Image (cartoon, rainbow, N blue to C red; front, side, top):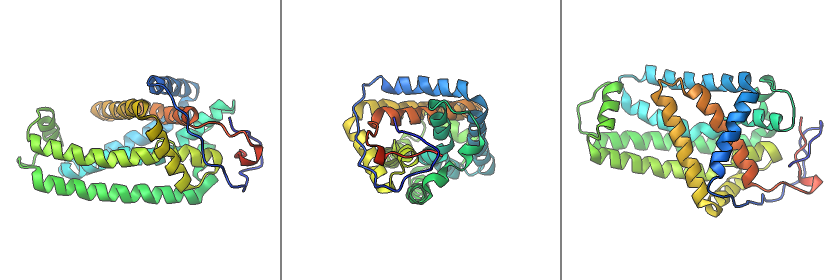
Length: 270
């Protein structure tokens, strides 16, 4: 585990992260630890949960009669999740260190490594915009049914109507989701915890996926499943499930990346 003190991040160049192998059951342990963090720090965790739920409700309300935009923005919700969950990572980090569960320090955690987090945010933003455009193109080319409202669209999806559209849409979405997942599974925690640069963090994240394909597949399925449950519960489930996913992502980082042993390469804590 990284060493901490009160001085702030050191300027020394960080070593390339050493990625470890984990077993297939590890994602279940991460979720269990995420629930534990939520129980230990309920107020700040649920604050972020309400923010996630509010964003989901806003998207649904604004684009209720333009479901093609809702579908793109809702799926983009998963693409931007690692960036939006930074405050939850910080809550888990503070709890891990035995520090108080305060909301205020988590609101500005991005300032710890603002430049590299900004680069990562731009990368995710570009991927999201490309995905949103690709989603609209798929709707225009393959969605042949009459344009219903959002509830009607969901009914058609659950009934597996217009199967050609579903296959193409989810295939394209899976491609974008895989790219983002590979680049982000541990990158943001690395940038926050070790002051790592954005490129190295994304390469290490891709390495974690390449070294642990089975566990990472289980982890991806759990993230998608918990998010879907949250949306299907009229977004109310997001209040609890998104904090759990965020906290669990921190524990995934802790298991997947070996601790830094050299004092000169550690990140000092505020």
